[in-house]
Amino acid sequence: MKKYLVRLFRSKSLQNKMLFCLILTVILPSAIFIPALYVYQNSTIERDINSINMERSQQTSEQLEMVYEQINSVSNLYFLDSDLEQTLQEAEGTENTEQVGQLVSLLQQRYNATNQKIDMHVTIITNDDRIYGDGSYDAGVSVARSRDTWWYQHLQQWPWETLWLQDEYLDSLHGVSDPNYIYSVRLLKRFDNWENQGILIVSFLESDLAKFYANTVPSAGSEFIINQNGVLVTMMDNAGVYASGILDHLQDGYSAIYKETINGEEYQIVINTVRTPLWRVITVTPTRQMLEQYDGGTLMLPVLSGVFLLSLALFSVFVSRYIIGPIKELTTSVQRVGGAGDSLERIPVRSKDEVGDLAVEFNNMLDRIDALMATIVDEQNAKRTAELQSLYAQINPHFIYNTIASIRYLIISGESQRADDALRAFTQLLRSAITGGEELCTVQQEVSLLDEYINIQQLFFEQPFQVSWQIDQQIRSCKIIKLSLQPIVENAVMHGLKGKQGPKKLRIRIAPSGKDNILVSITDNGVGTDRVFAFDQPSNEYSKNIGLKNVHSRIVLHFGKEYGVRFHSKPGKGTTVELLFPRIESRKEVM
Image (cartoon, helix red, strand yellow):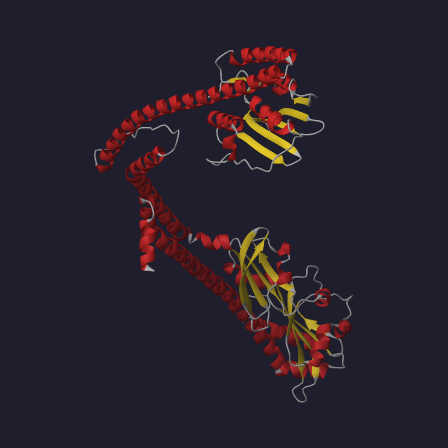
């Protein structure tokens, strides 16, 4: 592993080595510890927030338990009062109700005086449907209907239980139009046989209950109290989240802490259960409000991290600009020296240290290279010109030799008229071929020369061969290499059509190939051959044929290796030779 790291380190550039060291010593530890520290800070803040919310919810629960204990204490005083038990027993079934009413009033003065924070009212409904208490009761509401309520039926089944509830029937019985009363309901018992003696109802306003938890509700938060049946008892909704239906999907359990997003804002929700009477306290606090007290601490870590990373970036820029930059510029210039055609730019000397000395020596080396390259370019141009002139000189004698030999054959054969016609056409062709010293000519000019040559060749056939021309009009003014098509046609006539029996055909097609090239296709239906001409090989059979060799070499020397001649032939099927040229308009210069 160590050897691998050493090899890897040595193979890297200086800039990558420094970056590698920076990553190992600074960036990598920072990337590990800063996020870990940030996560730890957030988890600590979240624990603190949960602890604060739970403590606040527990305070509310304790306040409510204290209220319920006070009300239960008053309820127990009435339940255990022997005078009340005796009076109710004596008055049952008689018309002696005044004595019971006086006693209830006396008891209220006695017991309610011990609790001045809550305005409680006591109501007693006896078995004979009489009602006693200090409230104003609606005479139009039947007292006997109390036996039809769910809570009465529940108490008949569980006679020793005390129920805490809000009830429409009790509201109507007490003449309450706004249902904001809370009732503690239990059965009164006889002490001798524990039979039911009536119903004891202690009522108090929901607003009195809210006084005990109002101070614990956050200014932007909410607190809800629901009974054991999930019905809302009281609330203080500063956050305005009740309308969102938050109470419809509370988590189950005696207590809980979780987060929920309501109307696009995140809230911390804490649930606590009051032991008596198993009511649930739901505290809802916006996370944003809880985080305000930690703004200083939460911003400190990102700020310090940002300052550290900014300092690191500035240091990296300094190192890259004043140390790595000059070395990298020197390296780039050295690499560019090997690129063909690239200009050899000098490196500005910005320092007097070792890097500056290297730059000076490098610039001196470039001066020497420029002088050497200029000499080489001149020599190459001279050599290329000489090669083209040599190839061009080879074509003319070859063409002249074949033509004169053909005319001589006609003279010997006694066909003086045909020989005279051939000599006249040859003179015209020769005059056109040697006129002007340019290497390139237009397609139209090359086609005219080729037509003169074909006319000469037709004289040597008893039956003239058929010639078809397909010349695209839009490329007639484009330039190709002069006398590049005549050797190909000569090869087709002399080696293809001459030895063929039957009709002889020659097709010449010149057309665009894509947007940038011209393709010349010369096809004969001659005898064909099975020889393979691979022009990219230095020694091949095509070297025996001076025409093909010279044409291909001239095209490659002039335009590059992507252009040239392609040869396709099959015995008995004929031959096709294709020449690919770049498309050069007459107005363009050829480099």
